Image (tube, rainbow, N blue to C red):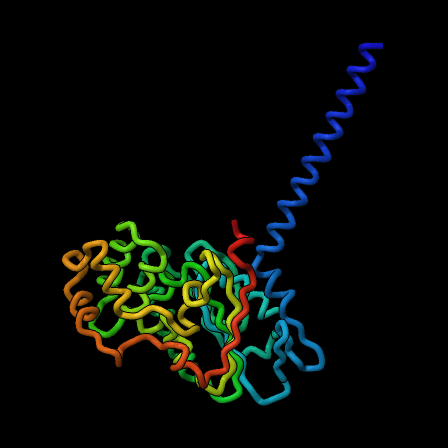
Length: 292
């Protein structure tokens, strides 16, 4: 009797463990699916009778508009892949920048690979191509901005007078000085011709700029997860404060120090008021709380 009881109890416990493992796997699989940028983008975009629906926004695809993809980041490729599957040959062109090792293929957009977390020449050239394409857009065009985490390194395009090598030096200093992401990006945005809303500013104001992004920042603040394609909330004073706080003025290259000290309001990054006449639509495909 006792042996039988023990055997039955063991079977019950074993069955219970199997059920717990099954439940745990289902939870993990659900979390991975929910946090997958490709799946999220694929599910968000719907096309019916030549009407593109993204959330509550709708865009008529029967107009004689062009469609572009612009972006860079560690989660950008799967979003671009979903866009190509949904829109196919409706897409005119695009520039997508991923980090080395992210293998894949795009048929309508140009796929570039660059270095992360320290920027390199490949990223610089790809960023130049992205900015050039943005400037070619016109009224009624649809531009998908697919900027995700990692774009600060993958999309380097320093201001005139600061070389890529010098930008690399600044990046290394910022990443090792103890500064947080807000302090780091305040500096990087103000040393860039493409970050801090500059890419959005280059897109024609009468085009539709649709941001599809993934958040890796607490608070899901857009200008810290897709900062090239939305208005910037930081100022030169914030960048200067970072260098003051971490005693970096004597460590950064002379060209960087000179630019940040002397830059006036005319060189400030675009704010909400500067992009007020642009058709901007932003969607966070995966929020930070789903990524932890």
